[in-house]
Amino acid sequence: MAIRTVLSILNSQNFDEDLKAAVEFCQASDAHLSAIVICMSTAPMIGEYNAISTVWLDERQREIEELGKKSEGIKTYLSGTDLSYDVQDIYTEFAWAQEDVAERALYADVVLVGRQAAKDEELQKRIIDGALFRTPTPVIMNRGPRPMRSIAKSILLAWDSSDEASRAARQAIDLMKAADCVYVTMIDPLSRERVNGEEPGADIATYLARHGVKVQVDRLASGGSQADEVLRQHAVDVNADMIVMGAYNHPRWLQTLFGGVTRSMIESSRMPIFLSH
Image 1 (tube, rainbow, N blue to C red):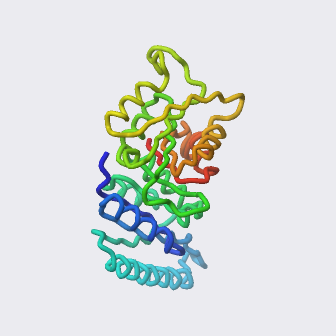
Image 2: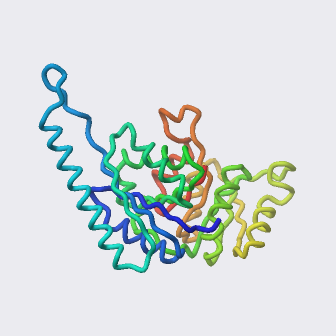
Image 3: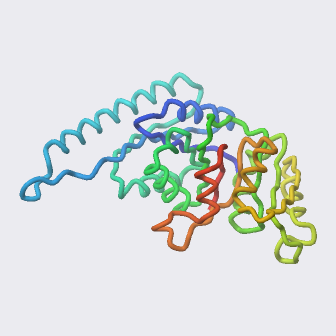
């Protein structure tokens, strides 16, 4: 999938690094940058006779004005680049933030969540809920120790022949074409018709190679370890810059947001993850 519009979600309290990474990513992809800076308001303070506190109203107005200034600062910064861009500021409530994210993610090819935004657990949850599980748009999230590279030279594709993994591979095709090597990684694959075929990984490797992707198939034994642990270790072993994988949400997603492997990968991976649902 060609990446032509990138939605970068910025935490209003801290976003300089994330904005710079988004600019570099868009420059490498020749993509339009839609930057949205989000401030989630606290719940209103209720005083006597159920009246809303004037202190809370004053604080809300201060936050709105500060958000506007930061939005203008972002526009000034982006005007000094060669990018096509637009900037929006969103002042929202915790209960509605995922709806605001989903509305804008519908019109992007990928959603970027840098290290600064990912550190805000409340914002991260609403991005996952809004962008990943309410729209068909993939999310790149970075919780690692370093800013995301504009071009990933080494990519690990977590492959299990599922619809989610297939969708992730298709949506990340442009990123994988630019990589020096894509490691199609399978854990305890079954050699069975209608699952992985007689030679697990051969079909997806052929498909990717036809798109110009340089592929290596790695079939790993779990040895009793959890799948997410094996994936993370192999990503380190091959010096991967990014992990591409399908995202699986738990049946009771309102409580848990996303399933075990997906959740663990997001919370524990030391490199950017491209997630598609």
